[in-house]
Length: 217
Image 1 (spheres, helix red, strand yellow):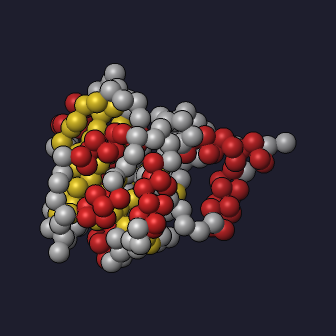
Image 2: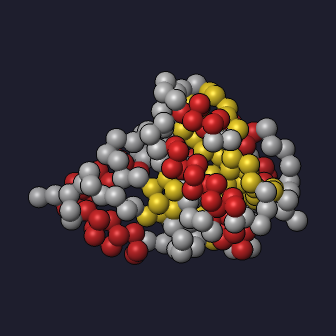
């Protein structure tokens, strides 16, 4: 039986985006069937990220690794219990109000949900259609912005590894290899930013730039 939810949000200089992220998590926590604790891992921050997180009531861990996989791992490292649900999102993302309830209702060892973008103002007008057309044809999306896993399964496979990108896919691959169930719901996606300059190598902004190059004459 699960008795709580631990959320980890890695953040590098996210003072501008973090308040919206934490506000959305607070709404979702208010609808959660289990108590929720949010941890922000402030990674090599030079802005007010840590202060903003503390003022919002989050637990804050400050590190200097500049590595999203390591930052996620640090957030969960001190939580040694088998009766919890681990969830992670990104500081530039907004989870839906039903996020925790939906993940728990999936009745799976791990939940890898979808993401969506609402603000495309930094990109050419044709890119949203191209992105959504490709996204809808692909199955099994894995995003660090919308990922949940039981603490037991997470510990069994060794948790997040210190990868600068792809730490989310790596974790899900190891879960599957050990026989854990992973579901990919398409409903209630996490809304993430489409900023042109991301915070990690080979992240979502790099993916969008690649799509832009495909369709730009």
